[in-house]
Length: 117
Image (cartoon, rainbow, N blue to C red; front, top):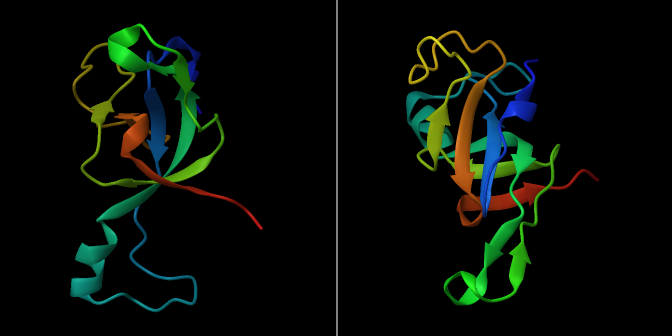
């Protein structure tokens, strides 16, 4: 895994590592084509870094901290946020990122936090 400490999100931004969408379920059943398309609507991701939060009243009010912390598993829409690559030669291309797709999203774009039982 690369060193992601060089990315420091500001305000209510969160840096996520998206997990790849599986074509099969755990028991080996292949999902039909219609289910595959639906499965991509929501993506599971791991929080890498989280910003401090945002301020109410146009930046002059109290700080509302982000509710997620590094290591949390979250669900986000597959279209939410902006993709990011750590490749300094071609920074706008995510090809070749071996750890997974990195995406920066707003805190309010996170749908849910997955808690382990």
